[in-house]
Amino acid sequence: MNNAKDLIEFHEGRRLHAYRDSLGFWTIGIGRLIDARKGAKLPDHILEQLSPAVQREFDALAGLPMTTTKWPAARISNEQVDELYAADFEEHCRECDEVISWVKELDPVRQAVLYDMYFNMRRRLLDFKNTLAFMRAKKWADASSNMLRSKWAVQVGKRATRLAEMVRTGEWPKR
Image 1 (tube, rainbow, N blue to C red):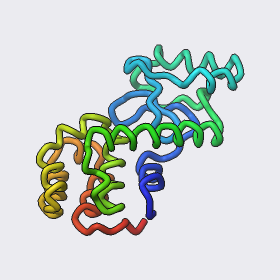
Image 2 (spheres, rainbow, N blue to C red; image 1 turned 90 degrees about the vertical axis):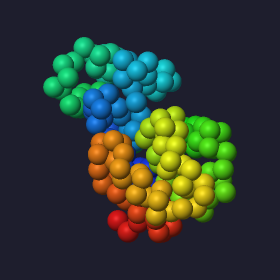
Image 3 (cartoon, rainbow, N blue to C red; image 1 turned 60 degrees about the vertical axis):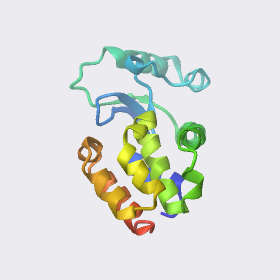
Image 4 (spheres, rainbow, N blue to C red; image 1 turned 60 degrees about the horizontal axis):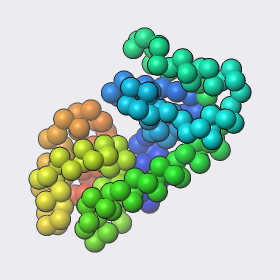
């Protein structure tokens, strides 16, 4: 792993069927939120490529009990996953660049950490005021330890440990 796009895919995973993320929201592909409770869904141009039967499976997601953790019938292709991820990655990085104006001043490894965290949390990353301040001041050990003391670190486990180590060392992880 030596770029942000691969790092995020490693952390998010790639799934062709709908599944519930760690917070219980329907997701597909590489971290693409499709849960109607969050105002999200597959884009129309992707839905239109699916058979009517599969489209109905996506419509059914909203009514499934919380105990249902995956729904293999609601499925897309690898090509569709790639298309969604390319758009999502570009959008998330652009947004991160806008809200954290100094992100481009970081080395590629630490920049990838912020892109990964933004992909995972969106604007909730801005709640990491101390971590971001430490990163901006290039206080890598402080930023790293601060990341690991968060509720987010408990929720994402090894992802947080890996990203914190990347911040501390400035090195890409060994798989």
